[in-house]
Length: 298
Ligand code: ADP
Ligand code: MG
Image (cartoon, protein in one colour):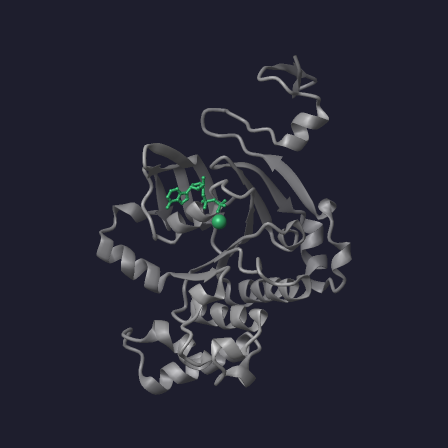
């Protein structure tokens, strides 16, 4: 990874939620680096900390400990007011529930205009931009439709246009296709890819759908509030993927899987690896063999 191109750097992010007398550690010292212009997927079981991480990157919450740098700037050193400006100007959000994305009593075009209000954009320029964004997501013909007059997929397309209204640097999508059928999910995923390629915008998508995850440059697996493994799209496939029409060709071999080593030299092994190696206890044998580190059952 090229240090110069790093847009987001998380250093030991910890988030503890206090619920009555119980503490939940949603993020447990998470380290992560994301390059400018990456198209990234985050996968992980329910409760693993995916949404918490998205909220941290989006400046919706502050961590209990740890830092997040954006273009080298300490995000949480900002005042609440500066954070609000950051959220409005630099990040776009797309949530799973379209009701969270759209204002029900406004037609599509006015929904896209909403984030631009109060930003010093003239009325005509605002309308023009909203219409061009709707065209970009393939929904010009629905500009006057209200959210309830659109399908789930159409609503998410409008939501993407809304998220892009203020030309953000980062687009965060938390399970944007969670409530959609496979075909529609695929179309939305293709839209993310083309926006990423055409606008150069950094896109982070939380998904539970491995198949969708294979359409991105890099897949990060989060477990227990930490990044455990990552899969990187192999260079050879990068081109092929752009021309790919048949999704059945997507498989595990398009990506190379890496485990993440943290600063203290700790490594997390996922359930698949443990099972394959027959490891079930809490101790393993670690040996160096032919210049490789071999981990096996005790
Ligand atoms: P995911 O998005 O991967 O399903 P979350 O980030 O939503 O996971 O949650 C991670 C953990 O933190 C879960 O155990 C969840 O119950 C807890 N959690 C998340 N948000 C809150 C909150 N606002 N208050 C208390 N606990 C929370
Ligand atoms: Mg979530």
